[in-house]
Amino acid sequence: MTVKDDRIGAAPSPTGKLSPIDYSERIPNNVDLAGDRRLQRALERWQPKFLDWWKNLGPQLPTEDVYLRTAVAVGRDGWAHFDFVPMEEYRWGIFLAEAKEDRKVNFGQHKGEPAWQEVPGEYRAELMRLITVQGDTEPASVEQQRVLGMTAPSLYDLRNLFQVNVEEGRHLWAMVYLLQAHFGREGREEAEQLLKRNSGDVDSPRILGAFNEETTDWLQFFMFTYFTDRDGKYQLGTLKESAFDPLARTCEFMLKEEAHHMFVGTTGVQRTVERTAQLIKEHGTHDIWQYGGIPLEVIQQYLNFQYSVSLDLFGSEQSTNVAAYYTGGLKGRWQETRRKDDHDLTEATYPVRMIADGRIVEKQVPYLTALNLDLRDEYTADCENGVRRWNQALEDAGLEERLTLPHEGFNRQVGNYAGHFVSPEGEVITEEQWNAGAAAWLPSQETRDKVAALMVPEYEPGEFAGWIAPPQTGINDQPVEFDYVHLAEEGLA
Ligand SMILES: [Fe+2]
Ligand SMILES: [Fe+2]
Image (tube, rainbow, N blue to C red; front, side, top):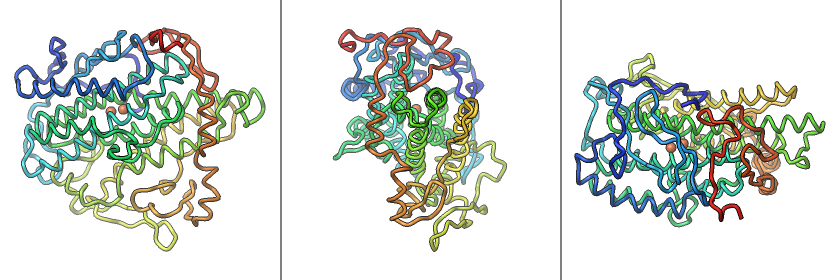
């Protein structure tokens, strides 16, 4: 595969013999599903419900087939195969990364014990909750993005949207497998619920806030794949360390697919910035709406919004739940095994920021209770990389302006900053000041409408909508002007 993520880099080295994925099965898998008739039947009963969900809440634009990547092995080389596939016939399957021989628990009170192949009774409820919350985000994003195909800026981008969508669908399969294989009847019920909750539904919404926000346009989609899929990457990174080995192996393989989603975000925003810079230079003004471009301050507003709602996904800075997850071995830290400490953390502290007397202050708290923030700080450092890259595009174009991440306290609904007003620069302000500034900091409905008005579909191979620059290279060594998506006749009307 030629599409490499700029953050994760090449896929991890294989740690055992390669296990090819068995495609003769109705449900492709490398977990020997054929050897467990009960589980196989449970999944086969769930499959038509999944397909129904895909038909009703998956991509709306009718297509014949799409040039898609399908996982065919879990090893380092050639794990994916590219070909034209009708999306409803995509081979969603169940793939776990190779088992590591004699894997041990790497942190918490069970450190040094063999990793668990079955769910310990004492952690059953917590593990099921963690898997359900992760599982809920996967179909949610497909639902949020379902209408975007109608306004794709190119066939290249349309294909990338659909690739992300089918893989989020597969991630749902991954979590449903764990629920059905390891949590009995309750797990099967949770698997049903994952298809019943819907993004933005008043009665039965998705579990986490950011997954109930509408994805109104392609700039938001790129911001979503950059900031919100990246939250997913960090959550998966903590579950990849889990003492519950099937969960760890599932998440490790999901991370491999996730890399492309973030590539779509990084390069999508970058290409938008490039085009914006080009129009500013060409016309000698920042007011480029009239030339069909998205003004730089609007890109900053979208960034402010998506970053702040994504920070909320990490939960409260201090949490006793997260301490229990860590101590129990259920959920580790980002790059747990590379950290040079005791992996027990009972003695350590961590600096947490909060507002006291109208000022932001720092307080040392027990590290174990601050693990959400530990993860969020890793995430923020990672987010900075993309911003640097986008600013390089501005610098290359000879522009002075720069994009920035807003302060962590800006526009927050969860944790220490919730209920306070903080400017993008990190000043604690009054509600009146917030109300006066918000219009410049966050995209207003009017701005969103103006962006939406630029989102005209471009379905000619090699052509791109006027608000975005073409990519440097195509997918899987194909040219940029490749016909990545064959639309259904009715879709062309
Ligand atoms: Fe995912
Ligand atoms: Fe993703």
